Image 1 (cartoon, helix red, strand yellow):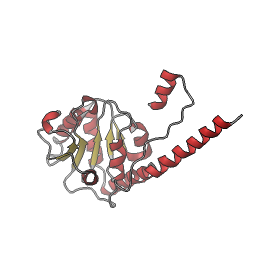
Image 2 (cartoon, helix red, strand yellow; image 1 turned 180 degrees about the vertical axis):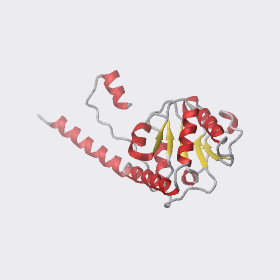
Image 3 (cartoon, helix red, strand yellow; image 1 turned 120 degrees about the vertical axis):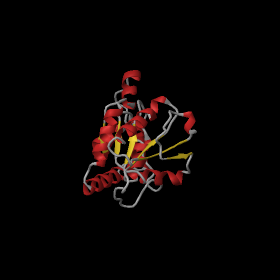
Length: 213
């Protein structure tokens, strides 16, 4: 997305991207097993582009197959500020940063329903906590899902997101654990230290190029 802007709007096709990193000292969880009661989570946001309405409808549809399905969400606004979710099991209003990892780690699936994004840090934060993703192709989701973190589904499509939820919940326990472990591994490959090292390296290369006669 950023490279595209540089190329299309500024004519710079040589721009180097240093991807966002995740703080794995903050976002982490012990090796996990799936919950006895299936649990899905999402970010509840007032902005329409975040797609909370898509997640809400997808979860409601999934409950036709899992009547006991729990849903967790956190956000900075009151529930009355965003799309209504009468089926929400628990909402965390402006949780402390130290508590957010526990919300991610309490879920079997984390939904990323955004219609557009610059990056979408919840993708890496949830993955770092061992939670498989069902994501629309916004921001960094295509790259992160392609690395093995879950399922990519059609944008603006609650039925497709429902299918992603059901497929992950239907996995054998060992397969789900393997997917959870892959999520953690790919997040650790994209931690702050890695991004900082890449930034320093690219900066040194650029400085050298400018100083060359």
